[in-house]
Amino acid sequence: MGRQPCCDKLGVKKGPWTAEEDKKLINFILTNGQCCWRAVPKLAGLRRCGKSCRLRWTNYLRPDLKRGLLSETEEQLVIDLHARLGNRWSKIAARLPGRTDNEIKNHWNTHIKKKLIKMGIDPVTHEPLNKEAKTQESSSHAHHSADNHTTENDGIANSSEDNSSSPTENCSTTDDPNLLDAICSDESLLKSLWMDEPPLVDVSWTSISAGETNCNLTSLPSWEEDCAWLLDCQDFGANDFGFDYLNDIELNTLEMGDKSVA
DNA sequence: AAGCCTGTCAACCGCCTGCTA
DNA sequence: ATAGCAGGCGGTTGACAGGCT
Image (cartoon, rainbow, N blue to C red; front, side, top):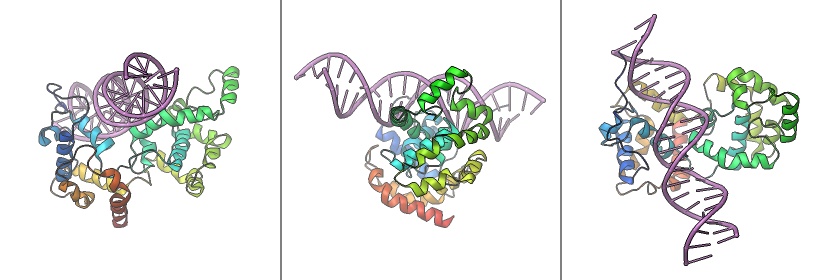
């Protein structure tokens, strides 16, 4: 029949991760790579659900993560992508190397939403709020949500919105207009998003998923070789890995190295 | 100084999709 | 062909920190 359950839910720990747990998880993944998340807790000696381990790793422990607030450019890109994709945070995150869907989702809800409202832009439809109110008066079904657009009609509905409203306006206010203009006007971007081939996705992680499918525990993904330094960090807590400090230097170097290999 | 309020973000929950036996 | 699991995803919650009164 089907597979065995992911975890028996009995004796599974919940809540915040301790430094010790982080250490175990990092050591395990750096040693064995990402394989079957279901097996990770057992093999790593963690009393956690595999799902929880995956989440912890992807959202917090991954060595290629950028920390800190999104830059103006990143924020602008998120707004633009949200206008096209709606709440598809994973798709949006795929366009921002080093950022997670959870992080972007949080940032959207806490910062960007308010910012857009302040600017008089509806964060859901990306239409001017006044216009939105009028539209709702005249036709109740016109603009329910970006999600509705994208799920029902996907790219078609959004591309028609693009002609009339904010995404391009938003692009003009970035601190890196060239980059954003290029992205905003890039038709291949949309195509690739719908084709599930994010061209900007971090190469190092594509290589991991390749290893993942093979369940190859003997040959580590290339980034792990580069990240072997992590294993030297014996006395760390969650905040002691030095990722903050390393991200801009070592991790960029690693990233570039990986990309040049690819 | 103390209590309350607000913002932030890590983590959980439940659903969906694709895969496997 | 089908039941059931794993992984992925988006929504939501709750703990904590900092600001305000």
